[in-house]
Image (cartoon, rainbow, N blue to C red; front, side, top):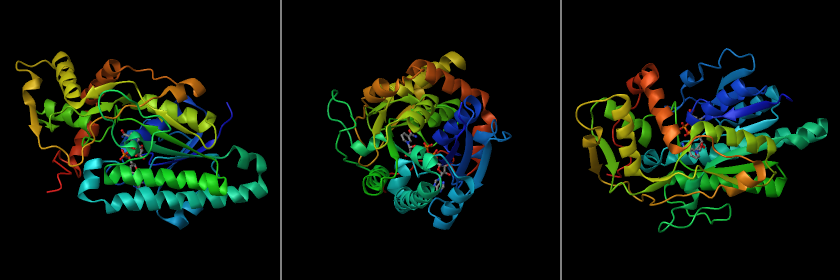
Length: 356
Ligand SMILES: NC(=O)c1ccc[n+]([C@@H]2O[C@H](COP(=O)([O-])OP(=O)(O)OC[C@H]3O[C@@H](n4cnc5c(N)ncnc54)[C@H](O)[C@@H]3O)[C@@H](O)[C@H]2O)c1
């Protein structure tokens, strides 16, 4: 296989680390991982690849223009996969400024660094300039929410973000498309549904519920728990992203989803039943379910039409919700050191994003 250099932003995060592990373990490509290491970045998620000669880590902020220009000049990437972001909706309600800074300003800084690097390539190495790609990783939350139980987000759905997080991601998507249209920068955008799987920071629904249940703590379900999300196993997402970055059509958008629409309450109940099977106890884990005040502006339903990526690039998820969720619970049971250290850090499971 032709070995390329991938510049991954946010590679110490949940999805970024899955992309880095996939690239190092299952391809011949090189990876330069640039990450600021915010509370969400964790180099322990990369322990399995850090010794590889094809892997380099650089600690830097994507908002730092000089550092980004230096990165491009030094590493001469063939592909940029941009995942660095502030990613938690509840935190965006408590403090939107950081979301605007990293997700909007940071993306603009990175686009400009990529553009000036790509312009030089056009003068010095036309073949490399032609195959250069800038892949921006985004979310289905930019589409707002769907009413009723029918209807799916397609690549043509209008943007209608509801939270500071999704509005900042929508802004960054617009910037990426504008840099393609105005400057011809070879960009691709993907919008994916909710991910779950190993190495997920325990402020998000699935890991929070697993760890609270194991500790015998209440399982806080927002509102009536009937908000529907479309779940995708993180390693399936990583494989889809690499396919888009290497085989996608420049200028195109691809929606990525797992065809797993579930109400949050159903997810929590399924987790309780899985735990009962794997770590049996006398009383049901379901007894720990506690309904709490809903998130302000909480979207009701997301669901992705992933037929374009299936049809055009031949990607389909390998995991069903049942197999992926079982693997996830088993991973948390086997990797206590990883999550204990995260819990000893900045986040101990407290409620965020109430706007109170
Ligand atoms: N988690 C999901 O379900 C989901 C779904 C669809 C799309 N996405 C998108 O995928 C991307 C990755 O999401 P995730 O869940 O892995 O997020 P995450 O919060 O787990 O990781 C984000 C990473 O970015 C790094 N980072 C943050 N600010 C930075 C900065 N200014 N400079 C450099 N690095 C910085 C953090 O240190 C962290 O390692 C995000 O862009 C997110 O919007 C996430």
